[in-house]
Length: 335
Image: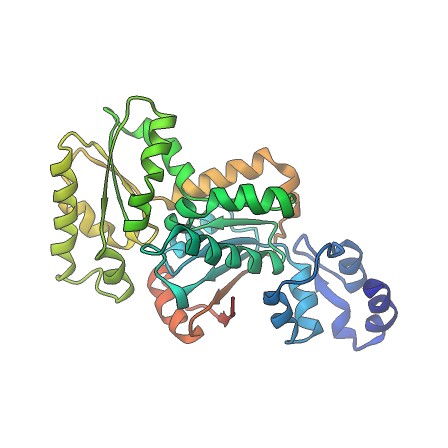
């Protein structure tokens, strides 16, 4: 009924309203966009209802795109987004940072699940057929529950992927002795997600984890490249290697940590391989889309990227420039 009404009435309005980006990223007609737009099978979530208040034009333009969604509790997921966009710049993307409720690292499993699910639903409402959790805490505490209890039962045509599996898959080929260290947030270490996954994929592995509670605050407060950061970088690396001196590979199990890479390399002994996540997650997603051409065909290819935050848009823009090295336009959203 809604589609029929729009065909009869909206197409007679100003000519500017009759051209939209098609779901494949090229310029198409509004009639074409309406023909391919899926008929909603459920009542719009509160997120979409709030966004609809901005007007019909905004809603239609949102529906016309099918971007890859990237969700994080804060800014670290921008390193994941950057890696994916560098490898696959042709796709459209939507990044959502729940900065107003960050950090997730010390929150309970139930709270992280609820917050992450709200973010995933918001990205689904924006037309994303696939969402990557660019957050280790969300991947560790919420991904499996979302896949089993939400996607499988309510949204079987959508997909949610994490950042832990791609990293654990490759680490076996990077380590010579399978003594692997993991530096991450308290929540990720406590979940033992890396330990369990590595031991399952690479039998005989010895996995040692260490929480680095000061690293994220240093990064988000712009102190990651200052002399004061050296103490905490050296401290955590020394503690990890004291727990297992045979470690020859260290996973940086937080998406913020690449910003500390220069100092991490400085205090890590030669011969130890450091494993940041961005490029491995990007390669894994590229492989996933190659193996699932039906999903790849659903993603629009306009080469655009939208940034949304639950915090102040201006504050996000300033902080995001540290991760992306460019200014971006940011929109506020309420979850």
